[in-house]
Amino acid sequence: MTVAGPTTIAPATKASPSPNSIRPLEWLNFLVADVQTGVGPFLAAYLAASHWNPRDTGFALTLGGLVTVAAGPFAGGVIDRSNSKRTLIAFSLAILAAGALVLAFTTKWSGVAPAQVLIGLAGAIIGPALAAIALGMVGPSSFDRQFGRNQGFNSAGNVVTALLLAGISYLAGLRSIFFVTAALTIPAFLVLKRINPADIDNNRARGERPTDGKSAAPESWWRALLTNRTFALFLLCCFLFHLANAAMLPELGEMLARGNAKLSAPFMSACIIVTQLVIAASASWFGRMASTRGRKPLLLVGFGVLPIRGVLYTLTHATWALIGIQLLDGVANAIFVVVSILVVADLMRSTGRFNLAQGALGTVVGLGASASNAFGGVLAHRYGFSASFLGLAAVALAAFLLLWLTIPETKDAAPVPAK
Image (cartoon, rainbow, N blue to C red; front, top):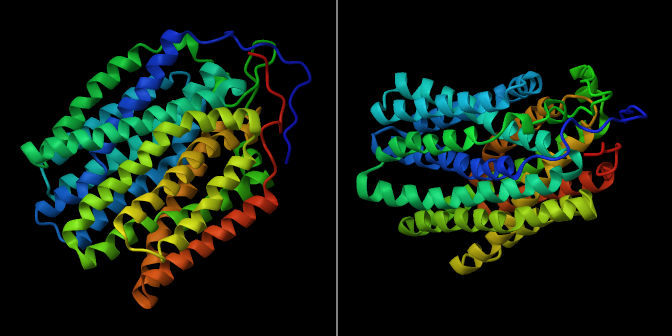
């Protein structure tokens, strides 16, 4: 479905945002990565050190993910309606800090469960709200470049925080990670305050094209999301991509741990850092390429390297080669995190439902990632790791073919208002 826009378009309310707001937005992406990293990968190790069994640890980790997946569309709807997106981010930082402090003071299920609910809810709001602010600041015509820069800052924050928290936990213990995570919300709050709310056009931030200086009524959610065939097919592509992708690295770590448990942890850290470094170095460039070359060619590259990666994992167990293969993971994820949101912005332009669609994308991604571990685990248990990697590669190939055959170029699918 193509959504027709009005024939005459008034300029957005502000010609361009102040650099004094753009720079804080970029650094906020960096600092938010700092905060979110602290309550993510380190939680499993913290609970294990507190004598939790693997089953209960898995339940706790799953709870936070399920809250994020379930809350995604609702959070998107709230962001669409909100005219104070800075307040939403401040609220999310506050509840994330509260969740981290609860984890620092207790490892009982009665504390861990509500902490994970808070953290999962914060995760459902922060990312889409940051994207909405970027769109509201720069408008559709510059969103691809700015969003790419934001993702580069975010990945750089992930790398810095992973190294920082690893060092702090080594010196002061795993509990210190959660105190540091709560403390990191303070600079995030300070940077958030430096974003001038007058630089955020709330109509553009929800995907509207203002007419006569006023906000048009948003399109009904079911019409914007459920009757848009291209959007539905794109969500299916994204589900298959993450169904194939999410289990690959954990399975690789599990496979290596069986042969050398001491090697697995530093290997996994190296792989994660390699991926994030690639994203940090390339996200801004991919945003610029999406602006000039279009979305679909980049998506085909990102989706295309995933089946290759799955096959390559079956051909070698050499550590240096596996870390080299992980560069492909960085390329695929850099393209996906940047370009998928640009496609959503393209398809939701003039509907006023950009953030609701972001939430739907997040839900689909979360479901695909959750199902991936179960699917890959069953294949590995019954047929071995090589068969599992090949099965995941086959799903990735199906995602590539579906994208190639059904998704058109979306960059110029709708007129772009003048900034």
